[in-house]
Image (tube, rainbow, N blue to C red; front, top):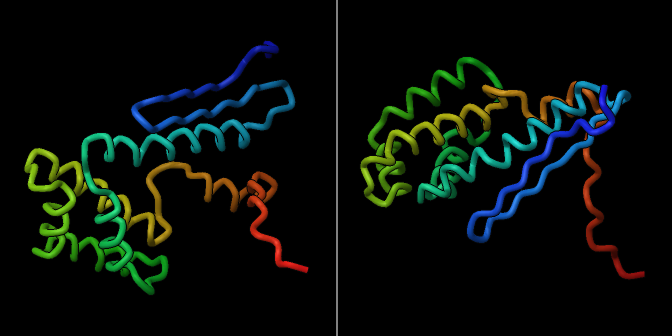
Length: 149
């Protein structure tokens, strides 16, 4: 393996800046590479919808409401997907697209993906999946506020 292999992702669009980079050496494990690729995908997935002007926060809130107190199960998934066909879901999509009908199908895709993810299913390899399979990959959380002595 060459010394200079790497995966690099740089993006700058208006106020959005994303930088992801991993240098790949002989001792770099495949799961470490997969973690970086998953991180890149997760960085750009949401941003694509936002760039189009879709109010993802509205859809996130609605998805959270639809999946509140639900655990991972195919029965719950079927129930939630059925709810996506109701008028209330269509209204939330219209609200998120600010009446731009050309964006409704795209927003519906975002909403569908969000409810599936809220139920702990996914379509792609995610950082969370990899952390579960390979606990040593878990990124340490930044320290919070320290209590006064």
